[in-house]
Image (spheres, rainbow, N blue to C red):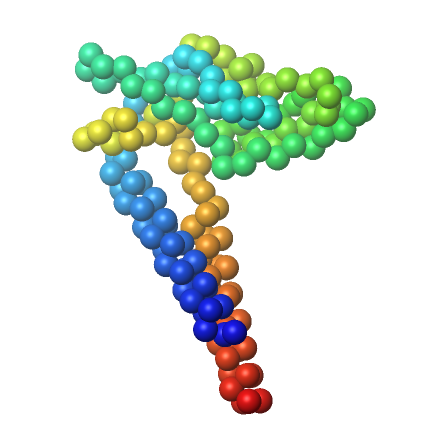
Length: 164
């Protein structure tokens, strides 16, 4: 029982560490900055909207997106309209809205033509992000869960070994 649990924990740890290193390496490559303009929106459904930012390097136009790690909604029938209650540039966007008739406020916060900072890799400008890297909870979550399962497997193995 302890060995499969330990293996599961170690696999999660390794995957989490690999994902974390990949993100760190990506951020090291993205060293240049410029200013771009909002040219549209990427509608992902369920009210999730990412502003699309065009930026020009030389004669080429590239696109970046302002992405959020998460969108937290406080929803209720008696809330009128929709309002963003956090910093619109934060990694997590917080919205207070009516559960039935609200529409996203992102196009109002970042209207077409508005300027946003873009970070990009000078060697490959397609590797980019707008304003800040949104990060991911996957790597830290896998690392913590993997460590927890591994410790649990060790405790279980010791207790079974002692009692058996």
